[in-house]
Every structure is written in structure tokens, then in C-alpha cells.
Amino acid sequence: MTVFARRPALRWLAPLAAVALLTTAGSIVNSLTATARESLPPRSAAQLLVDVQQARLDGLSGTIVQTSDLGLPALPGVAGNSSSEFSSLVSGSHTMRVWYAGPQHVRLALLGQFGESDLVRNGTDLWAWSSKNNTVNHMTLPADAGSHPDTGTPSPGAAMTPQQAADKALKAIDPTTAVSTDSSAVVAGRTAYQLVLTPRDQNTLVGSVRIAIDGATHIPTRVQVFAKGASSPAFEVGFTSFDPSTPASSVFGFNPPPGATVTEHAAPTGSGQGSGDQGAGSAPAQGGQKAHVVGTGWSSVLVASVPGDTSGSSSQSGSLGTLSSTLKTLPRVSGSWGSGHLLEGTAFSAVLTDDGRLAIGAVPAASLYDALSAP
Image (cartoon, rainbow, N blue to C red; front, top):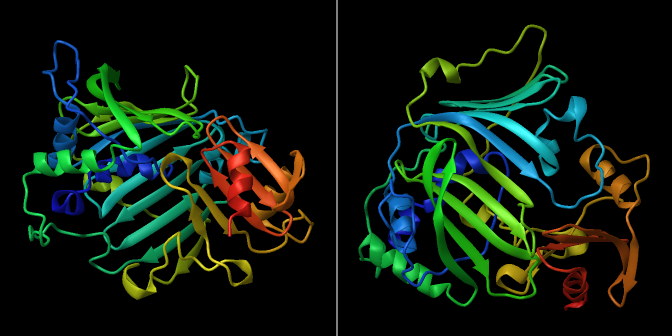
């Protein structure tokens, strides 16, 4: 389906994806009609997908609020002085400012209680700044990095209209997800359509995913993930203010603050594609094993190996040490698959085994144990 390959619908979720990577299973549509407010004409869900595909916007700016209520225990370093660090996004509520003027001009500012962290892409310059330690990381990218113009060349066997491509894509994923339309939402004071994705799989902890699509620009402006039986989202990221105009070029200029420690990094040597690219399903893991996915759709489980000691010893540092220290406070579990610590959230579960394996998915703990026992 060339239209989806050349113009991915989720590209307009880039400002949201910069905050957190949100992966959901596929969706289906049976030509249900969106019951929008009077200011919005009715649109079927398939038509809305095409609207997103064909959306054209030179730039945007706004404020994004991300809230996570995943049922996690209190995690060290996610509030106070650390709330301006991107690692804090796994818990609580966070406010960000975003500016976008094309893939080579992007700025994201995470605003904490006592500081700020910025990510800035300005042409070939990529900057990351943290006010906590006044540190700056800089990389000079290749001139064509992040620029993928649409050549308009169709793939073999994919000559079809955008509407036909949308219908075909939705039909293909019919077994996993039901997609309905809800009455239009209001996001950042703007009327929006809303798609509701409901898993057909009864084994998943996810009850629904709701995606709001701006009625005027057709840009996705909010994503909400609800656990089963919950009335409030376990995860939400969306605009509270939204300006669909191109920001001034000066917004993307960055000069290290006085006294900042600047570290230069080498640019990546490849495009991340081809034989040198290792996806999640082929990443090397400890002991020569590879990360792999057990199951399909919403109830799939990722099984990988965590490098290093998982005992939480003092020799550990950084995020792995924090993870191990946190897991030591969680319940111990065991079975034919081994033993370890269990983290149960409202929309996902995770097990870190004593032999260094990590199993995680939007499923109950029993499904993780089955995945760990699978050959």
C-alpha cells in the first residue's frame, strides 16, 4: 500500500512521539460514520485516515501535556529536580513546548519544576541540553539526514487511490481490532474527530485507544490509552494549545548557555536501514540469544535480555541501577520459567528474571510467564 509507505499517517504524531513512543496494534473499520459536532461534517473512519494521510502543514507550535497513570510504584528520580529529565516521562504529569517547521527544524522543551531539558534539530545541528547539570550534547548530522522527499513512485502492485488503500489496510487488520467513531472531541480549544480502537483480544489489559484528529488541519492532536474497565486514561499525550502556523526560524537557533559543558558526538555512520539495521526482533541479547516477540497483536509479549547484573548491586549506575533498585522492592515470583520480580501496571506487566531476561507486554502476568517458558 504505497500511500501508507510514502505518507505514513503517524508522521503527524512526530511531536507526540518525541515525548514518548506509543505503539498500538492495528485497527479496522466497517465504514462507520463519525458523529461530529455540528461544526464538523460527518466522516467515516476510513475517510479520516485518508484525511490524515493527505494532511499538509508547513509548521506548528503548541503546548503538550503528557500524563501517565500506569499503576507503577513510586519511582526514584521522577519528580522534583528530575522532573525536567526525559527519563521522568514514565510517571506523573509533564508539560512540553513543541515547535515544528519540517523534519530538519524541530524543538522540544520539557519543563520541570526546577529546570528544563531541550532537544533541538536545526538543519544539520542536533542539540540536547539539560539545565539540571548545564550539560549540552551536540552532533552534526549529514545534510540529508531526516529528509525523505516523496518521489511519487508507486510500488509494484500498489496502484490504488488513497481511499482504496485505507479500506484495504483496515480490512487486513480486522481480526485484531474494532474501530468505531465517537462524537467529536475538543482538544486545545479546537473541535476534533475521534477514533476509538477497541482490541478484540480478551487477553490484553488495554481497553481502548482513542485518537483525536483536528477537524481543520487533520493532524492527530491527542492519544489516550485506557486500561480495561477504566474511566480515565492510563496514558495520555495531547496538545493543550495548538497553533498551525510556521514558527520563526529564530526558534530553532541554539547557543550553549554560559558555563555549559559541551560534549561533541560523532554522527551516525549509516541510515539505519539495510543489512546493518537490527530491529527489535533481531537485536542480539545476552548469552547469544535474540530479543523476540511471543504471540501476536495486542497480547504479544516482548522477551529480551538485560545486560549486566540485575541484582541492584552498588556497582551499577544509571538507569539500569535505578531499575534494579526499584525491582528489589517488588514482589518476587517464580515458576517453571525461573524466578524474578514482577511489575504489574494498569495497562501492562513486566517481569525481570534473576537470570537477566525481561518480558513485557500489555497482558496479565500469566501471559508473561507463558512467554518466558516458550521455546
